[in-house]
Image (cartoon, rainbow, N blue to C red; front, side, top):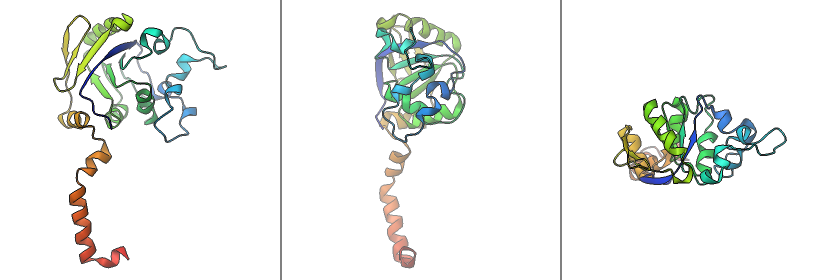
Length: 203
């Protein structure tokens, strides 16, 4: 998993509440277990009509936001089903950080496991960032995970809270597999002891 330390990028505004995982990545894109290629389905029903023709004005399709790495969203982002394809699709599209007043629990946890930083801030602070994001490509926002700070284009700084263990994992690029691999020596030592004491279990 890619480390998350400090990110400076364009912030895209998505001022919608209750954006569920089916809106983020509709069910027809869930046939793969690969984490790549999902960006084409991201917010598909908001971006395309029933014939597959692009709808005008969706934020991430506007030139100013095509390279956005930060998404500023409304309350309860990521609600609905627990599909892990939702953070996969966001990450595949280049989104590394989402700021919202609240997140659905499962989606929030899945973000950390996939290298995305979800930040919870009071609504009034999210509204300030939303205003900044509406400036387009000039709305460069910096997220410093080590300092737990967000700096807006005018230099204003907001503090955010994050669980210490999750912060450690993101800073060091550790997903569940990476955490297990840190215990490789102890696991190998245990397996060696078990093989010596109970060799018939490996027969």
